Image (cartoon, rainbow, N blue to C red; front, side):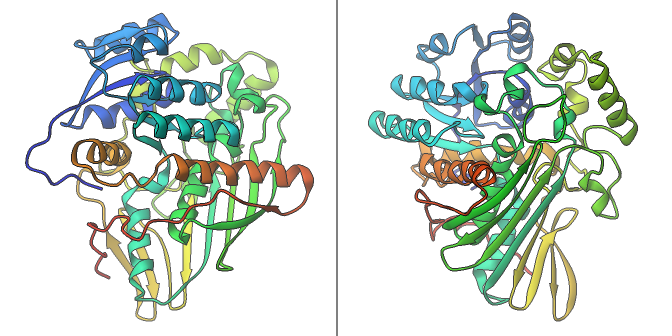
Length: 417
């Protein structure tokens, strides 16, 4: 997914929605020498002021439509609230802009289909982005699986324990009808990953969800069993209530994800008492906020720990694979091998530029767009099936799955074990 061309013309990018999702990707964007941030749109004037301070040469707009009319904008990163993803994608496509839309791609399959249709009709690239399937260790795991060195992939398991439900939320984020809750917001991380590692074609889903916190009337938990078309099983679980966090699952981790155990306890008490200032906290972690760096600017050499996507294990005939500090552990007949696949200084948030590199290479060099609208629609279908299966208490059959193309990541070497 990296661009090896000697000449790298700049892609002119606009951002629609400069909230927390936007702040999370801005560091990666700023680190890329082939991206010019030329415009930003948001409904919060203070956020636009901060955006302009960060990118002095950019233009700012209060509406997505104004930004999409800007002829200098070539592509857009859509990180507006989930209920607007379809509307803003179709708007951008109509104006001839290429698009990265954050997860979840949309809040219904009908919306996703309209987005795909709009992109194809207007001849623009549509990439469903911002999941952990883009990270180098996960892609390296796939290369090892596909090499056939250890036989056939037999099972996938991913488990996440996070403090996602304790982070500051706006009203729309607490409404499942507007795309709120763990299955919509965090499910794509795990679903994208198991689909990538397993070949893409999920046959069915049987799942349950949990809504256990009256101060947060959205699902904060799910567990799902997925069967692939070839019969391979995959299990995914995410508990976002933050009593236990997954970073404690590795020896180099601790009890902190976004918050320490003490902070998590204080937040729960404030939520129960109704004294938490979530609006103020939210603005503090947006671009230019007092806590933006604390949230999103970890050291580039910080080792991986289980976070929102969690802890993944791929089981093959003759090996198990899982993430290590800077790569992949391979457990085989010779013991345990730590295969480093993350270059020095490219840990943490820097890896999140992969989807922008993919879009850039597709626009500028005509490379394939792997995580296109139909891929995103297939991932969304699984997330929706998790919620529907929990309601109906039955297996949900899937109908919109697409395979991982054989040429995916062809330029990435198989890691040496």
